[in-house]
Amino acid sequence: MDISRVNTIIEQYRKDEESVYHTWFINNNERLKAFRTIKKGVGKVVSEIENRTFGNDFKGSSLETVVTAISEQKQIFEGAAHAFFWKPKLRIPDIYENAENQLAFGRFLNACLQAKNGEQIENAMIRLDQLHIKGLGPAVANIIYFLHPTLFPPFNTAIVRGFNALFHSKTKLGSWTAYLEMRAAVLAANKQFALSKDLGAVAGLFFEIGSGRLIIPENAGRFLEDEGKRRMRDFNKRHRQVLDDLSEETTHSEMQYYLAKLGKALGYSIWIAQNDHQREWRGKKLGEYSLPRLPLSGLPKKTFDTISLIDVIWLNQDREIVSGFEVEKSTSIYSGILRLYDLSLSLSNKSCRLFLVAPDKREQEIRAQLLRPSFQGTTSAMNYILFSDLKCDCDSMCKFGTDLTVLDPVSKTV
Image (cartoon, rainbow, N blue to C red; front, side, top):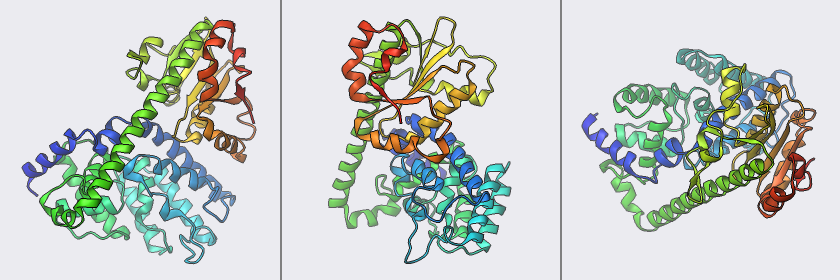
């Protein structure tokens, strides 16, 4: 492998503002939030399998929640859920009707959750492969990536195609052996690439090459075969996605602004998610509306870090949290509920009010999530507010409200 040539390709990858390096890996806060959501979701899958409550279908299962959270992670994971869809005619993947296979899958996921190093996970993969469970291939590696991002790369057709082009390899999609061989090559090369310890960065490079956005001599022929229509289609699709992402960020910041404005008008101190302080709304950074530090003490670091990512928090004069808000425009409602639930468990102030803030079109999805059996008895204090109500009534609530009860007329519960 010619390192100087590869470094030139990497530099091109880094400079492209619309590459997944920027739109997914570097500048996407939801990517960071997804790791905890997916890890917690995998734990739930394991628990349900062990307790024999997992069920016999993908739809509505805890596994669906996990892979949906993965599929939401921008272009690189689009379609990641397809491998887990229950295909009745083929009876694959065979983990829904075969109890022994389901238990083996649960043991595999639990081994990956508990693993301390890559060798332990690799051994678990080999044991799973030896069972020859029909339809359960290395697409599972996408889950493992979110559990151990520095040890195992994600895996899909475009990533493999890009890997093959760059490494002049003939790795085939579909076998655990091929995946582990690719992983060994990726780990060795990543030490020289100096992109990131997180293997998502180099997987993004392979994805850009494999999808034809980043042209190198090895993929030029394939690209030129259908360059015309495909290039325009892919460009337009990516352009729309980038515009949609910008629109989503803008709307997200707008809702955080309204919540900060209202909280201040009611006399509360405001905390805005740590990773959103540099976002802007109408030319002003959101961090200017926020406390510089979240005044919570005595919490485990992981819990504190999770709470610090909640979109907006209101605190009273005693620096007690009186309300928490999660804004979910297009990302997982489930992950927002988990973050608010973590907040409620860590608070001494049990009268704290929790709110999901979401677009009107997602109201039914919110209601469905809050009615999930796993949330019954845990989210009784969780309400939701629709974007249109917050935006329309913010000024009136600022003018006439005295405390957070002003939200009662615009908030809803299940």
